[in-house]
Image (tube, rainbow, N blue to C red; front, side, top):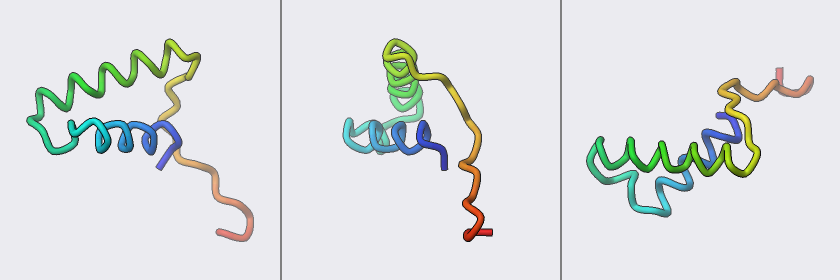
Length: 55
């Protein structure tokens, strides 16, 4: 799971939106993405590259 995905999951969990309706969860995801981009984050939905000893 990417850093972005981990941060999103934590945001949803802590805001209570993870257990809410799909529509509310989608709005929370949009709000998180807007904040992420405003803070200078880029949307990188790629998995972390495993370290040599993890292969």
